[in-house]
Length: 526
Image (cartoon, rainbow, N blue to C red; front, side, top):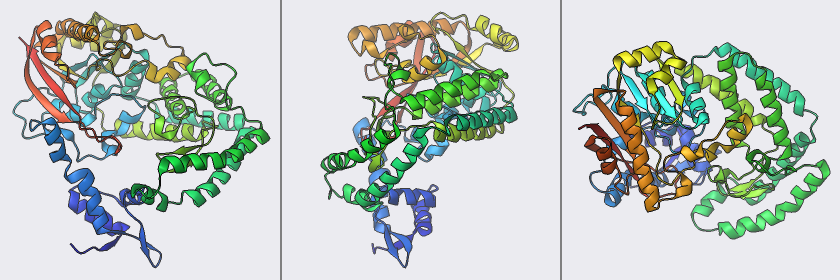
């Protein structure tokens, strides 16, 4: 094909037509900024090569289905990849109120709960007014989608913080009160830090970084050269980190910045500078003064989301912490020198605004149905009695109508420490941890004993939940069952696997090119 230069608008239109889904001008700008395609220009207008675009989309999109099926098998159900959705759609409205490892996307829940979402489905599993149970509720995705689809939902989670997140997503709020309280806290925080030497320090540091990055990491040329292999990133990064370090140390000394706290006993002690810790404690004390319980809880979630983003780590290592980072560093994610944070204000304001917006979006979609997440052990909980204690009307409905089925993603054996991922929140709020009651905990690994305990744990959950389920119930469990444990689990629970839906889980980062799939097991009573 003849190469053609396109401006950003033309490039977005071409890509939209080529991919069959919306590609915005900002998507094209992102590709330029991060060196995926080369920036060209004529008379001051930014242009890109159509051939560059074609090569990029062929590499990351067009051949992906073929590549996944070659590695994972032809039984892969590509319709369940939901690759037509942009990231903003898979994290829509309240689903992104707080980060959470290991959650499934809402479109997957919709597919199995909604009887209108796919004309090719041969069976309808749930209807409006049904009650759905998620005994491993996590961040509450099933509850949220049930609410959107006109169904009632019960969630159960051993983690008190997970239950807080899930319930905060489905509660109705006085939005005006949430806005008023966040604005008051923002003003109070501004007064608290306005005389802090950390503010002027950060301003001076940003000025120095701006000059340094423009010189040694120019955008987008640096990232484009990096992708072409013209620069040895590791060697270049080490050189530039050493070059900038004296500038950082001079400013730290001048403004008397405390890079670490004197204590090092808890997560909050280790992973936050003294300046940020002071701000966290200040905001938490302000939250305690809020009278409206629902407002207090959702603003607590805003603070938790904020402090997660303010940990002393690199931008590329937010999910898997290694060691606290207290100096400027080369950031592989952004391709330049970055710095730790010295104030929570930016993220606090960002997340407060974002949360209110997401609550308003969900208010337009939600239905007048019951949703409730219970804190406890799904292996032995009397679900009806616990619901009655929290919401008598909902409890009576569950007792009378029974639960139609389950849609859940059980924990994976030996992969995620579900309490530790939110250690900062447990420290701050003083919640009791129940690590020892997790099924498939990380500390047990993936040994034979761990697998046997896992099979027993999931089986116990299903056996307990069965007594609350309708006779014609449908149970959907989402799992990557590489150890083939679910046939034994079904047998132990007196159930049978009537279908399997194998779906590709598309890579979230381009660094991870591993083809990965999970199976949705459809179980019914034997």
